[in-house]
Image (tube, rainbow, N blue to C red):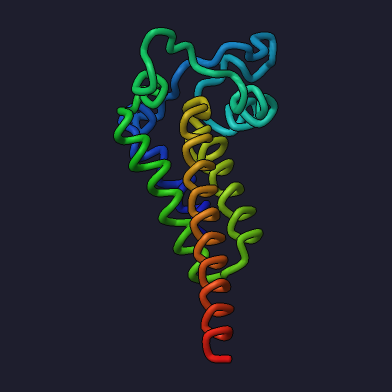
Length: 167
């Protein structure tokens, strides 16, 4: 349900996309001879993005000399917006998911699927998937999972120590 809402709402949140327009490709290494390369908006653009799935995950943006803030803002959004929105948002949603379904495997799978859907389909209708958004979402997810695992280990150790003290 969240993915469907995302696919309908994301294009309306971007002023350029809300006017029915799309952005030109910004990522190097894309197949310019692909029939959907010239499409800037709609489902053919999504298909093009999915065909180049690994390119979007592996081609670093050219931010030489701009440092970490240049990398974090490489998609045109501010570094703070990306850190709060993607890293922080992903971590918060993952923690909420762990409260609902304590299976880290299920939360990792669902979180990754939502990340891919958001970047490649919802926003992918009008803009290239963002390298930094993809990775910040995954890092937020992994941070929440690591925190959950650490808390679980701490609870198990505390329970063992309580048992040895009572004995």
